[in-house]
Image (cartoon, rainbow, N blue to C red):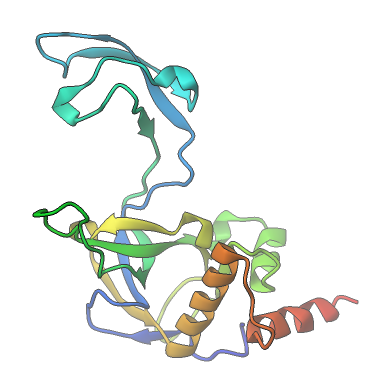
Length: 210
């Protein structure tokens, strides 16, 4: 929507609400590795032997690990996390704990942002033209200052509100947030509106190559 939305960003005070941009520690999704627990000290189950595996069936069926509440039919899955990655708050702050008497989980749903220079030119161009259902393009901005980024919709995830780091002093402008939400719903559900501006924009961009 570069050229159709202006501006993409606005300066903002810190708030945990849709469109606000924070730093956090999101994990890379989906996790691809797990621990194969091979030996557990029955006197202190914090002492154990394990090997790194892919997410295979043999990572289940170990003795229960009471110190971390891991049942024998559960596996310990490993995922990479990036410290200080920018994220856009999508929502999710009204979650409730379903167990009677328990406190609600203090979480927030976020979309991680990746520096566009981490991708090759073809991927950046494709994201900018909305060729990828799982990518939302955010162009560089001078005022307020922000680098070119790609929001990975397939990495949208809950994070603990307490794990939100510094607020970046930015939020998405209203039109940019509306477009992000529309593209996320389209990706997550397979539903797209017939009068989608994003689809019109993509058609215009692709027509320029013919």
